[in-house]
Image (cartoon, rainbow, N blue to C red; front, side, top):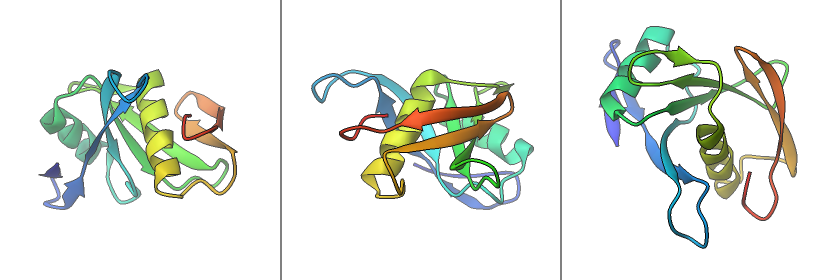
Length: 120
């Protein structure tokens, strides 16, 4: 899904399911990679257009493996389990996690992330 933020930037949103069992089910979350240049307003606009319960925005972190920002269609939230799992499973599938465990920076602090057999 491609959408445009308020700054007229094109943003690619992947819809990834967290908590998939045997290749089926799971909870869908929007995942935006390389979100470093998006403002909070941009992220909120994208999340509203995506319309899922949560969208995770992944960017660089100076202290952790990645920085994640989470937005519902209406507001920023501090943390989201299924969007975290979706984002890190997607990053792993793309070969962007350099080792089995990494970490995320969020507005409520850092969290350790373990990726094993393609699952976060």
